[in-house]
Amino acid sequence: MATIRETDLPGIGRKYQMDTRAGDKLVVVIHDDGRREIYHFDENDPDEPISQVTLEDEEARQIAGILGGMTYKPKALETIEVSLDELVIEWCRVEPHSHAANRTIEELQIRQKSGATILALVEKNRQTINPGPHDRLVPHMTLVVAGERKQIRQLKELLANG
View 1 (cartoon, rainbow, N blue to C red):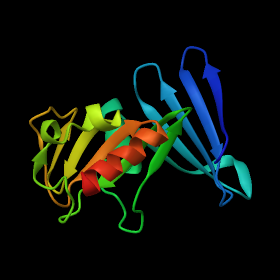
View 2: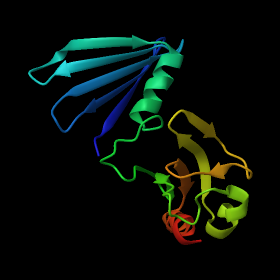
View 3: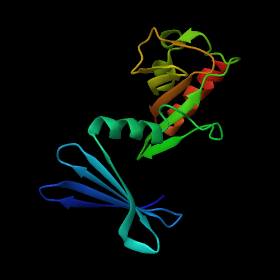
View 4: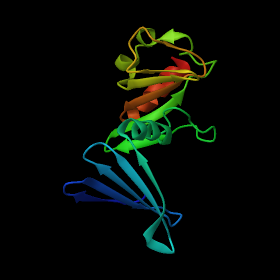
């Protein structure tokens, strides 16, 4: 995992810098007014940006969702995982033949049986953030789930086999 260096910019905001494995340098400046500036530097000249993009707060959040996989998950990746100490956030797909297909969150007793939480339901043209107990899991839907690794394993078992 790449190291991200943070720097306060008094009167401006905060700067984040990352050197990628490919040798690129990226800098993101978050202004106090919500604007974001993204700078891309060439490895041969780390002081002069070769490109720059300015985004308003709402645009930056949309891009963050795209980069984080909330709107499209590459088919090559079966699961995406983010780890925050003991908390794991992962994407799980509801397969057509699975036990969970066409059942509600309440029917499956997901929280009670696994301890994991469903953060979002993502379908081709629709997403539900913070779904309720009456939301139905349908084939090919992607679930964004959170919990400890053991809870996520239990949730996957519950989805597949009941």
